[in-house]
Amino acid sequence: MRKFFLLITATLLAFSSTAAETYAYTERDSTLYLDIYSPAAPANGYTILHVFGGGFFKGSRTDTWDTAYCHSLAERGYTVVAIDYRLGLKGATNVGMTNLKPMENAFYMAVADCSAAVSFLVSHAAELGIDPDKIILEGSSAGAITVLMTDYGRCNALDYTAELPEGWKPAAVIAYSGAIYSTRGALKWATPPAPTLLFHGMLDKIVTYKQITFGKRGFYGTNALVKRLAKFDYPYSVYRIPDIGHEVCVAGPMTLDELDLFVRQRLINCRTLFMDVTLRDTAIHPTKWTNMSVSDLYKKK
Image (cartoon, rainbow, N blue to C red; front, side, top):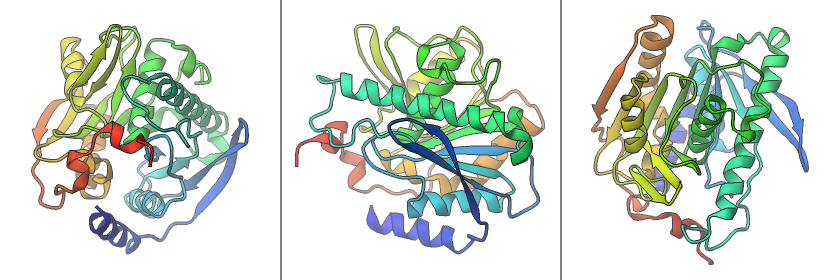
């Protein structure tokens, strides 16, 4: 995985030219910050709020991969916002299906922080030059779970999204290796979700591509999520990557054209899309992550 990661990062850094401005956006146990990258190309009017991955126990908005990726999005004309959030599983061990409470709390903390970041952006939209109606939530792995659950919580007025501005809706949600955790049984939306773009490795065992349920609780990965979106006729675009596991969480740099296509067709041209693509790309190849499970991340060293 290291060679794969270094190749991606080196490619992104070659195009990095925009500078970021840092703002404090909320106070928790400590101050949480966000970085705003201005478009380096002609602005397309959209803001991408990027939420980093790391299993809810590691990672940072300032990690090399994340800053390089934010630069690459800015190069394509997006305003990019990279946020901090609290790492609810930092120091946790033996987290898994038999010990869900720490994971559940980590999800809700991250979503609450993402909601607070949105509230900051909307409250300061004029001075920041951001259109509140054109904010796209995007995340990788833990970040993908966070953005999907932020929109799901918004649709169902769940407590953990209480800090979202009243009446606000994301322009879209983009998730790389994401899922929704629910304690209410099968996924349902009281109000329509935002247009959703999903990328997922079909062998993913860290963030399940399928679903894992136990009573009313369940993790609903991309395959399960798409089935529910289709059932209720909610538009979606999905790229399924066969023979690959969790590596897709860092596939953002290789799928910038697909992201742009989604924004252009769905948001700019207002087309209603139900797109389901099996994507084979030799740039996205198996590593040790293909066979890793969620228990491997948190087992005691």
